[in-house]
Length: 498
Image 1 (cartoon, one colour):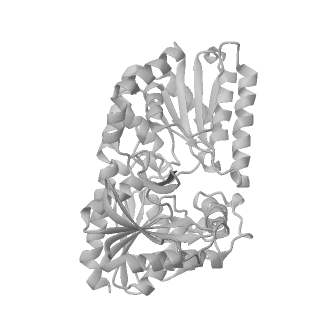
Image 2: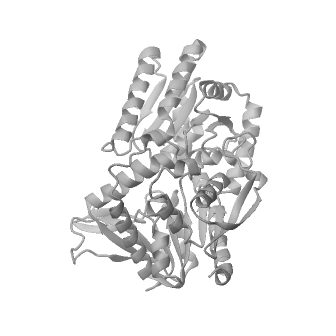
Image 3: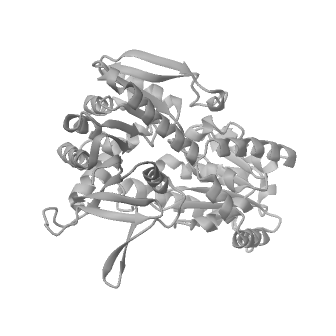
């Protein structure tokens, strides 16, 4: 059955489990996250499809089930699965996407590695995604493509199916032209994105950067700019923009440029936060802490997340303020990434060494300053830590949005707690009432965490009230509504853009 909405995303929208020798498709363990959010859009159409890749030993195996029909709490939809070999996945995702694209997107030029990239393989995989989307889409359907590892899909799809509406959402930062144009495939990528009807970003800065890159590479005309809503102007922060482009024209085609930061499922978090078992877990954490203050840091083991920089700051804090020893504890949750990738293994080793060094220098028989957790923490357990933490310390060196800080704010139904947030996280343009810090500055990092620890209760509550209002206003449903509006806008203007 052809679909009115086709979502193209590298991950499958379920978990595959083997039960009694038979594969079963199980709904995602946590309803909080981007995959369940995307699936919720299927409720607005007669039939939807999802395109993803699946590991296969033999891509030509006639027994490989290319399309499966799924029925879950989100309704009935099809999943078109592309069989990729382990080598194809390695080249497409771990090498091209993570070693070439990822560092450039996050402004880490020194980590950019061009040599091992297999560009023909990247093209081939993107072409396969486009072919699958083309075969699933009904006439005039919306095809919604997600993230940088599928950059070439829109261009290929436009060749195959000029009738469909194509929307692309970028979940990472988008860098300025001086950085993006390091990529030797820059023009091919931007030409593909300009084949879209809608190109979406989290914040105005990334949209402005995209248009700047496009103008540097080709003729882009009739750029429409509007003033940024006051809700997204955080005075003095690094990523704030005053105006944002909303439309460009290339080769006679109008392309809408949208900005809407992904939010969290506030209702679900509130439900988890108010469970009796969550309250019990929170009490247990607080009882264990006693009079000590708890700082919580949560992120992935990635050089963009600034884990080592954060630990260094905590070590300096204990060195400069002996009165804090035995009085404060940092729980640093850094979920280990793929250790087979050298860059991530290097970061994990550095985090472990720094944590051990600080504990070795300052720990006593009854107190360790840092608890390092390198495993994924169940979301229900994480909510309890959010509610118990005096300070949530989120200081990436670069981040497209960052949802951890929003989860922390949503979980604080008690109205207390302090958020310390990097100005280089996309969320900083919304969450200006946090203690904003520059992770590249020793002085800024150290003073921010000290300010948070010493903040009087009235100020804590005033800031948290403002933060909660923003997180509730721009939750995941608001993001969904903004995407629906972008689809409708593209449909309304499509005939005149053809």
